[in-house]
Length: 258
Length: 284
Image (cartoon, rainbow over all chains, first blue to last red; front, side):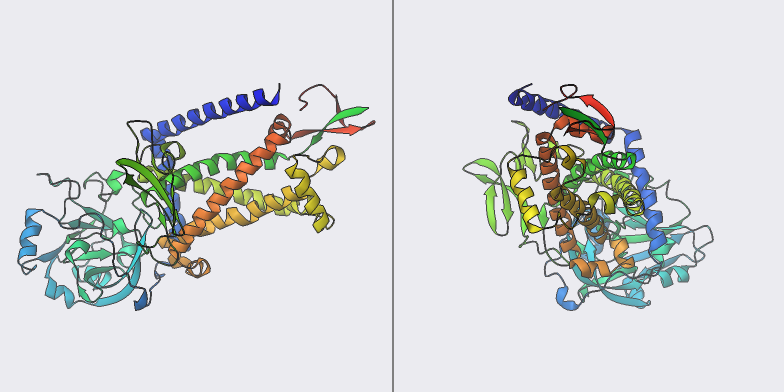
């Protein structure tokens, strides 16, 4: 074999192998079983992180000089759902946060009542699943004491956050509504807040007014905006697509610590 | 008389972990490019300075035609067809890395992440087995650590010159790795690959809480993302040179040695061992 011939042959073989490789990967990506196998790693990641990260280990907090001048808003930035539009029009005066589900004492709290609850202020980094990060100062009611006030029943294992915005389109059955969920480890984490202020100002509409979740050791899509209702549940299989959140139903990991 | 001798070049563990690494790194690279495409810009520091990325890949319209643009350190290059704007005629679209370089080939961040983290686990487990075995079994000390003689500047210079002329060690000299091989394998196995894992973990908000010192080590999450990208690029560069050297120094002999473990060298005179007459098998 002369070298030119060999090069040509190698090139051809390389190109065919490459095409075959891409086709094989796409086949796996497009199949339920393939995705199922790949998704197994998620459970491993979650367990490994729960093992090495202390339950109370804090997310890094930053100095005020690092606060982003132009914090990027993603997902819904101005919901057009009629209920939300009405609340917004009267400055959230009639807005109430409902806490129900598997609790002893269901609660309904106005914004003023929520602000009277044990609060925390923290300057933290927000990491979008796309790869960018922004830093802001958040003030809000700590979720743990609120849940204690409502009194979780023994069966409660997750807290579901029902939101006002329909990122997936407004449907009569509410199937396009944003929602999220966290387990009790993250719900009781000292930095987990229901934030009503950002950088010392009332939470802007683009960032989830009047109330958004901050669960600082996970990615941006867990930080549900426009939170209306908290529901304590034993299991979230009956909600939405059954995966525990809007983006989770669309293929993203429920445990978004990575 | 020249005799072709088949020597045992690679142990079973080296071969097995090498090929698992080929699979894992290919998929990590391609799914990594899929993830990069979701936000094709890189920054230094803790946060994103959106108006000042040190690297960004995008598209724009020039003279009524879409063009791909790649910006590095303030300099912009037109990279239509590969970076920023690519695809078959009629189906071309705005995408940082082209469809043939990503897994899956269509835009799908969620699937890209699944592939990435699945093969990250495989890569880490494989790498730990390799490192433990290499350290305990002496592979690093025996086969990869350069000897004092090899580290002499004259010798290194000589190796660089002969490599550039595509002249490779023959006979007895070819039994072991040459100094350039040793240094580059060590730099990849003990430098770049562990750095990939460390910078990858530094991007995890969960892991940040367990090891905040990693954020300080790399200068913040966005710096870690940049270093992750740079190290990946260096690994790609290594693979290109590695494959070129495989081809230049005897494609089939090299590939066979990484599959069966046996590598042919030509020696003069009578030798012990498994002997094969010159002219048989592959001769470049």
